[in-house]
Length: 181
Image (tube, rainbow, N blue to C red; front, side):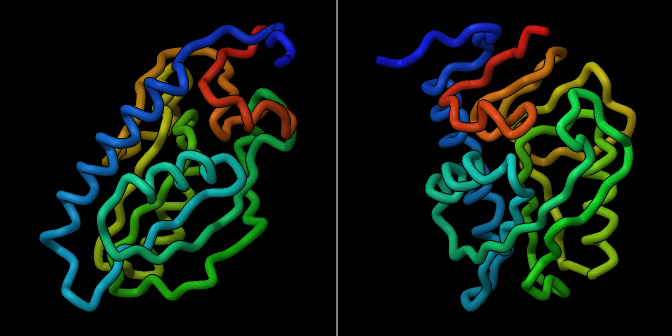
């Protein structure tokens, strides 16, 4: 029997996530079918650790030739507030020059980490660069980001579940929850 989730307030259910991911996958498929050459695949870059669950579901919802790679960045260092300093813990293993690239991230919050990553990737001269996020959290945004594919817009709260964590906990929850202090 599952333990009750104390200190967590449900925000988005697993069913709502699954439905939205299917529609995002269909939209991405439609957008890239016309731009990918016959011998070309979309390079999907996941931002570890948080994006891996969303990315896996999103990849299964897409009907395209796909290659994957990952980067690992850190800006929270086990805190509820970003340190505003990005550290790259794992770099790309794939050349992205002249490739169509889709970055997949769990959440766009302050925007600092994603802005840093997008600038880092632009310097590698991809043919196109788009961004998909499961959660677009608006309350604390410091940097204007062009989000191409958004699962859900949320205004506030420290969120966990579906890849989102607090101090490396709660990533495995099937829905999105607000962590109560």
